[in-house]
Length: 157
Image 1 (cartoon, rainbow, N blue to C red):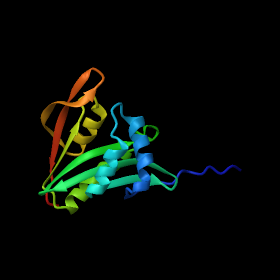
Image 2: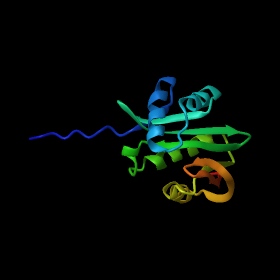
Image 3: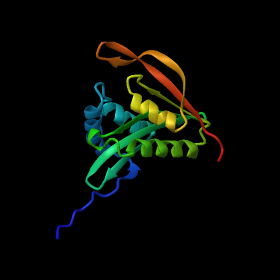
Image 4: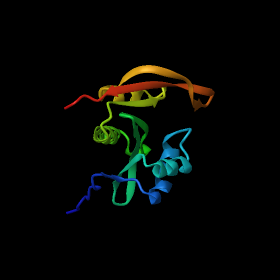
């Protein structure tokens, strides 16, 4: 008889400075124009809500949320390429929405590339709506790419 061990289900914990190398490596693997190690470090130092989804031996994804003046802004959501399509992106966004509620945010904003239809579909399925565009917001292989600005009103439960 052969026992097949399943990997532990990932859990959330606050991001720490010692996670930044792993987080930056996932970011580089996932995006053609990644955030730098320094940007993640600045988010930690600024006191943003920075969370990782991890197993004991590895980080599988992360999310970063900024809250102020009853508004929240999803700054970054990423799942390691080898861990995608397992529902982890949705779990991360749900965690960030819970944090926004904890901060008493009345609305949550985010930007997403129009060339990322999977992310747009995820955000729409969770209640985000497109409210505008930011022209030339993101760097792109051939110049710049607009950002789709999305928002969600946080309703009292």
